[in-house]
Length: 166
Image 1 (cartoon, rainbow, N blue to C red):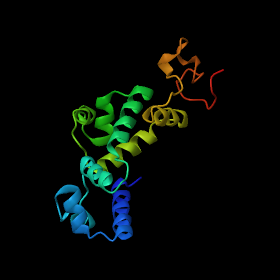
Image 2: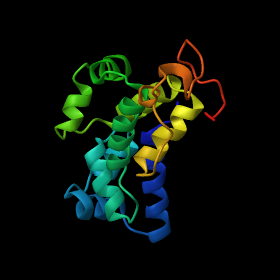
Image 3: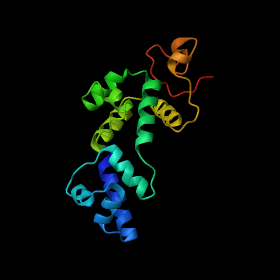
């Protein structure tokens, strides 16, 4: 599984090493919490909004908008009900509703949800999800075709067959 918390820690550590900034200063300036880096090093997993504040402070792109875009694109492309995604991926049927209201999950939860989504869609769906999340046009969804499963899946089970529609 993709460990987002470990990636975040590595990004912070690389920035600290590159800039020579003391860990307490980063925590204080980015969050008003001089013990943030120490607690993170001891294994504390930050929430997505906290990580976004630190990432923005060190000049990196925040992860929250991309994650929220991936969630919405996954729901749109796969037609998964939001409560099913929340229940199966995060153990919380209200996960998507809470995310939409601004609640910020921990990075380990974000990683689990991303892994769950990746395991439940085809390569073509993943490509379309990435495109939508990036604001680009995507291939038509199954329900957007006039012949139902005739395109883009071209089979009765609704599974991607690896071919683009004519």
